[in-house]
Image 1: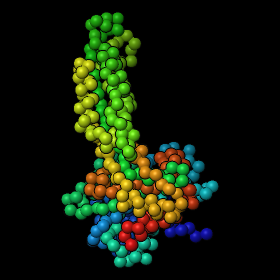
Image 2: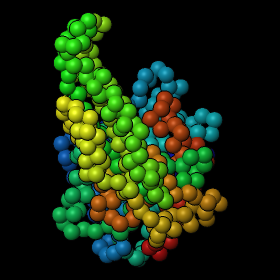
Image 3: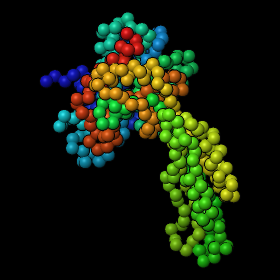
Image 4: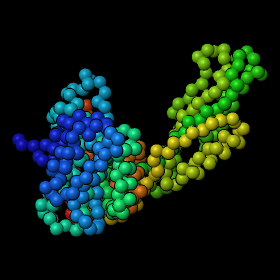
Length: 377
């Protein structure tokens, strides 16, 4: 049986081994498909990262489909049941790196737009694509660069659908209307190294830090809100000592991270951490790294249009969620008031034998097309 256009395009994209940040020609293939549909395509290069901004139309509202062509490394190839860049069907599933995260979504975007334009050549507003090859990497030369270019030009975006794999048990059961921010810290507690038999001549940073760490662990940073769980503070690494059991270390280094909601600001979280450390009289150094601000799209035009499309196509009543890690939605939300993430089930993403169930491929495309119809027809 001849595969559907969406499945065929998904397989083509999977076959291009675009391990971050190498696009491997994925975006050029998209350009070849979008240009005949009336899209003006622009490639924006930043260092080793390839980005695509493609737009059809010049009026508002502007609906953007956003995603990434880069994938994470395969891991040990010999542990895959089939080669990771050789798209393979097995037991009703399509296997290959990027099948779920997120080449099926990109293929579904393109075919959905192709079908929509064929039926609605004179549609309202504009349709655009924002595609990067730097989502799985540092994310400093990708979507954020394109957003800055658009901002400088004064180009506005009204709606954005990011094709991240958001579904849980079945296609459409979950869409993301926001993500938590990520604030990391590297904390160095200073002490005085010495012989463990003469503690009065040394200052043990582990002992000095323990009460402050206990307070940081117990602190209630906020209560969350309608869409978010309370902000979480977690230690990820603690390092101290020389390796010998008779030496009091001179320093202890702790890595920690906040996943914070819109109920807190990163400035306030920083202030409170410093206040706790200072209250315990610690001699310390603390370096901060903010990798993403939280964003939130309340229920509204875009979420309603997407939820209605999911219901019409699958019969599923979708739920709004803000769980999970950060995404490029955090950058787009700085220039777009309504950002929603939606894609296939995410259980296999980044894993050996990543896959998507074949029965979800065309319905995913249909949901994107129905959303276009709800907003721009």
